[in-house]
Amino acid sequence: MDHAIDAVIEIFSWVGIGAGILLGLVALILKLADGTWLPARAIVEHNDGGSLVRWFDADGGVNAAHLNHEQAHKVAGHDMADIFYRRGTPNRMRLTHGSPAVRAVSLLAAGLFALGIVALITSWILLFVRG
Image: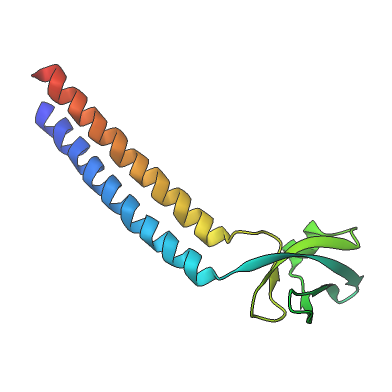
């Protein structure tokens, strides 16, 4: 029975640490691919066809983007909204600074890495308790 527990803990430690590091690298690549997003204050226009936001970028250009249903729900009743636009890509915006995909992969990587560390510490404790 002790050998089975040791094997399971060893698997959790190797898989947890390895997958955590691998997903951490994937999160880093996703973060770099996401680009630079800058904050801006946008004017919100509500009409029957949906909602539209307009803003000025850092280079003085005028940008506009239609909001999807979720974004329109978040800015409903507001004439202005704080947004983030992608530098170098006209008419592209989002309401959050960080990408939800990057955040999800980062949290998964941190969770798996923590699982691996806890399993590694548990195996060390069992090694010294039995020895």
